[in-house]
Length: 107
Image 1: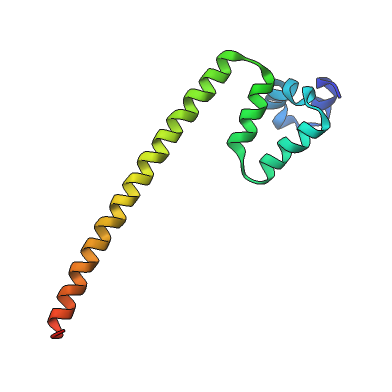
Image 2 (image 1 turned 60 degrees about the vertical axis):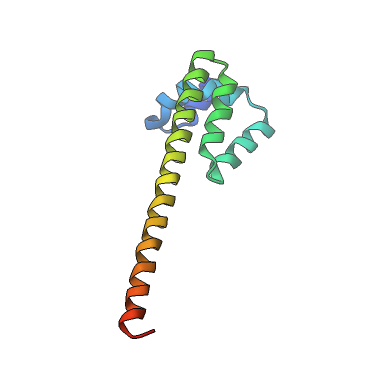
């Protein structure tokens, strides 16, 4: 399939994205395309986009993608740590409340 054939089959609102990334899609073999679709269907969007962008071969775009991905990873790690600390603090408060409640009933 050529890029023009692909664009004919794409809804008008998706044509700008298809124009930008379609060349990577038409370069894929049928097996690669099926594997890429499976990534999307199973919710592995980041891996799917990574696969597509690497197929384009644009080094500058890949560097930007990798940098943004690293920033997201750092933000996710920081959020996970904050959640861990919040849970730890909540458990500490609950333990104090439990001790106070037990003391109030004479246990």
